[in-house]
Each structure stands twice: as C-alpha cells, then as structure tokens.
Amino acid sequence: MPDTAAQSTAGNPLDGVTSELRRAREQFIRLWGQMGSNWGVPRTMAEIHALLYIVGEPLNTDSVMAALGISRGNASTTLRSLVEWGIISRIHVRGDRKEYFQAEQDVWKLFRVILRERKKREVDPLLESLRDCRDVTRDASASHKRKIDPQAAALESHNARLDGMIDFVAMIDLISQQLISPSSSEKGPSGLEIAAKLLEQAS
Amino acid sequence: MPDTAAQSTAGNPLDGVTSELRRAREQFIRLWGQMGSNWGVPRTMAEIHALLYIVGEPLNTDSVMAALGISRGNASTTLRSLVEWGIISRIHVRGDRKEYFQAEQDVWKLFRVILRERKKREVDPLLESLRDCRDVTRDASASHKRKIDPQAAALESHNARLDGMIDFVAMIDLISQQLISPSSSEKGPSGLEIAAKLLEQAS
DNA sequence: CTTAATTTTCATATTTTTTTGAAAATTCTG
DNA sequence: CAGAATTTTCAAAAAAATATGAAAATTAAG
Image (tube, rainbow over all chains, first blue to last red; front, side, top):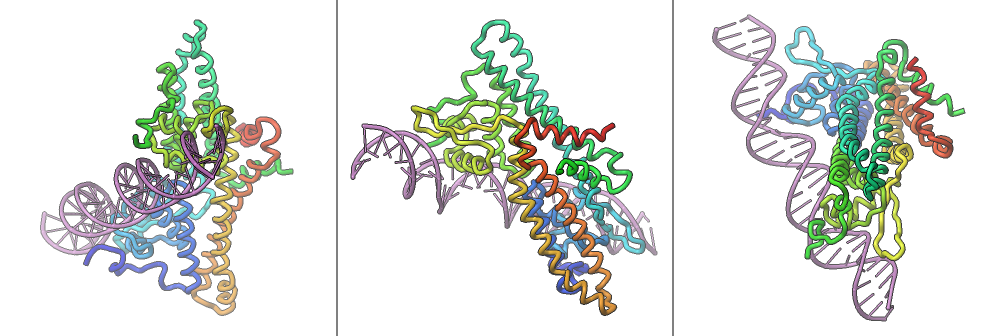
C-alpha cells in the first residue's frame, strides 16, 4: 500500500462532525491557503496551519495527510517548516508514539511570531543589503563632487533615492521591532493596544 | 531581427553612467526583485519598478527591455500591471511617439498605494469570505445548543476561533484604512506621522 | 485612407516551485 | 540489542508560474 493520504487509515479530522462544521472547516482552509499564496506562503503550508488552527486540537501527521490529501513527505517537510517558524508546536500524547502538532490559538501572538520571523529573515537582510548598495556610490559621490563632473548630479539624486528607500525600510523595521518587543507580548491583549493607539487619531 | 532585448537598439539606461552608479543600480534592482518574490510579487514586476525608481527618469518599453533583458511581451504586460496598481504612471514625451513610464518617487506614497491595492484586492475579499464562512455555522450553533448535542461544544469553540480570526483581520483592515485615508496623504510626510505615533510608546 | 510605428495579445516554451513516494535514518519498545 | 513504528530525506515527477515572440490590433501621421 503506497504511503499516501488516500489509503491512510488515520482518522480524518474533517470526518465525524456535522456537515456544517465540516463545510466551514474546509472553506476556512481553502481561504487561508489562498491568502497564503497571495503573500508568498506555499499553499500547503497555509492550509496545514489553517487546519490545525480551526480544528483546535493537536493532530498527528497521518490526520493532516488525510484531511488535506497530501503525501507524507510533503506533510513532514511542511510541518517541520511551520515548527521552525514557531507557528505550530510539537505535542507528545501519552500512550501514542506518533507526534502531534498544534497551532497557536491566540491570533495576535501568531501575528507577532510571523512578524518576528519575516523581519529576521527578510527585512533585516534587505536593510543590510540596501546599505551595502548605498556604500557603492558613497565614495564616488565625494570624488565626483570635487571636479565638476557631468555625472555628479545623477549620482546625487541616485543617492537621495536610495536614502529615501533605506529610511523607509528602517522605519518599517523599527515599527516591527515595537510590535514584536516583549513589552507588547507579555502583558494583556498586547497587539490590540498598539492597534488602538494607531486608531486614536481617527478622531 | 527577433523582438528581444538583446538585439534592441534602444538605449539601455544602465549604460552610459559611471561603473559605480551602474553597479549600484543593478544591485538595487536585484535586491528589490528578490524582496518582491518573498512577498508574492513576480520578480520581473518588482525589478521593473526598481529600475524606474532608481533611474528616476521616465523610460520607454525598449529601455526597460534592454536594461532587464526581458521580452517585449513580458515588459508590456508587466508595465501595464504596474500602471493598474497605480505604482507607475504613463508619460508622453513630446516629439516621441513611444510611451514612457515613471515611478512614484515618494516612498511613503508608494507604500500607501500598495497598501490600498492589497487591501482592496486581498484583505476586503478575505474578510467577506471569512464572514460567509462564519455564517455556515451560525444557525447550526443555535439549533444544537437547544438539544444537549455532543457536537455543541465543538461548534462553540470553532465559532470562537473563527471569530478571533475575523476580529483580527477586521482590525488589520481598519488600521490599513487609517494609513491609507486621505487625511494621511494630503498633508505633510503623513506615513511618518503614524510611524512616530507608533514609536511613542517605546519610552 | 494608407502606411508605418508602436503596443497588446496569447499559444507555446521555459523556468521555478511544489509534491510525491520509496528508501534511509531515526526513535521508541520490549 | 532486535524489531517495529515513525519520521526524514531527496531524486524524480507534476504542477504552477513566468516569459517568449510573432501575429494581430491599435494608434498616430502624412
């Protein structure tokens, strides 16, 4: 018997519930998967997360395979990746040798985790690279300025644009830091506080 | 002669400048393209935007093709898409029949445009779909509560989770609206004001 | 209206991303 | 430690996303 979801005997968490509940779960999973691919997250990754979030309780690999109709390799790889992102956690169920996975249930915490990871993996490296890029024309600008070089103006405005972009990304970086910072995560609804702050000026 | 960038006779805006400037431009374009694909934007789309942003002046389709080494079809389609997003604009140069394109130079404006479009295209439909999804189990919940149904608890917690997610997305939606709103865009550095507000609480 | 320049379209090709599944590695269990 | 259950790996396959380029459509100019 090939090791695929179709033939698996593991319980499919989308079975054994009322048809409305099942339909709602499937719809949510589809939605979340779609949204993921809009934002550069592999569909299956988003779908597994959606499944674990909406089912609420820990599931093992076979259940995930059965619920989403995906292969063991795919499930294994994607689950691991989700664990690495800190979006789901491994759970050990007493009396069962299989590993279980469960999703963070606090949506604001989830948001903060994703923000932290994307900042670390994408924004920080981008900022560093942008600064390296800025350095390419730093000395050139000085040397051209002394002569009355025809390229000087182009160099000036190029640097201004690059600085504009760097300042912007640095600001995004700083804001992310604020949203991620422990003070935001330890006490209270946290993310909501920040949101409220932002919305104050609506008046 | 095939209609490709390699054989094009149009001026490549990455030529005819000092080697530092050229290198800086190419590096920036690569970076921005990479960042784009991290966030679900086709690499070429991000690269064209990067090119127009960093060169600063309007370029025609042939120049874009030459600079990035892409086909006419690709350039045409992607430029159009960027115009539809409101990220670049068409420019007509007197005495030249060709169309030129130029990128918004204010990074905060660019940010607001992208936010507006992603909200319109992705967040708003998502929210609507999530609410539809919520409706699937709205009546069910009521009818099951009356009997002492074993599914009632599952339904309850499912609805709670879905509501949590909906509230979150609604909040994101509201914040986006604030950042996009005319009051943010008409007077002053705008985006910066909001950022400052966010960072106040750092103390 | 005709002609030539320019832009758009879209079937096909290419590239990139994602998935599969069986073998290998690992981890429990007795 | 042996054996079985479980998880991971990764080469190959499939699917999805992007790009090409030549033909068709459009647009400006004479």
